Length: 87
Image 1 (cartoon, rainbow, N blue to C red):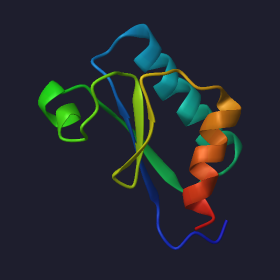
Image 2: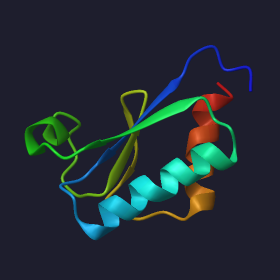
Image 3: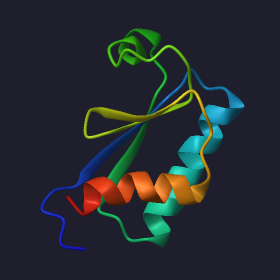
Image 4: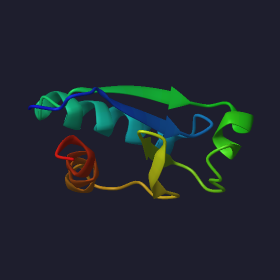
């Protein structure tokens, strides 16, 4: 992967089962595809609100909300990351 920068992926959610699953699936997709990315979990409601997201789980890549209020498949997660990884 010739990515010039590490992707910053944030999973937004207060800690519900779907949020935890999205974090787990995202880490699996990053590892399986050798994406140059860091995955972090944001549970602070005030910080989540700065992304203008009302429903969780949500995914943010490089400060851009790409998924909100749903638990996507690993395939969908991979597609979203690839959009950023491939420029």
